[in-house]
Length: 124
Image (tube, rainbow, N blue to C red):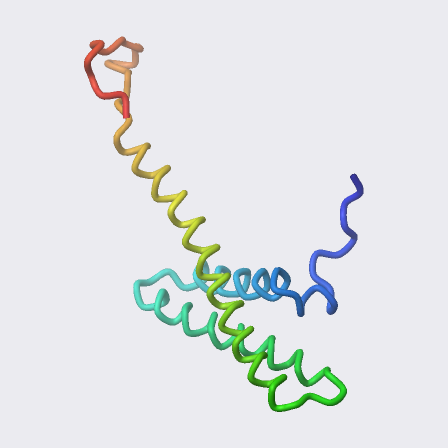
């Protein structure tokens, strides 16, 4: 299978997957740059604004947009935002599960030597 030459193009940016990917990448990068509790609320608002901006910009490329086109674009903007929110929730839930598993796993080393636990000890 051949690898794609480009990740996002102008044609894929205006699809649900492309716009959701762009919003998710931008908000994730902002979250990595500014690590604080306040940034979580700001990331949600930035995600909503970006979602609406991308979709509304796509409407400006339509030759003769009608009022219904603009209404559908706003609905699609919220759809993009909720898609990103769902994707972020799935990824976050997996990371939380992995962290909880790591915290509840018993270390089987005593004084640098591996030891076996009792049969009835919790594994996870």
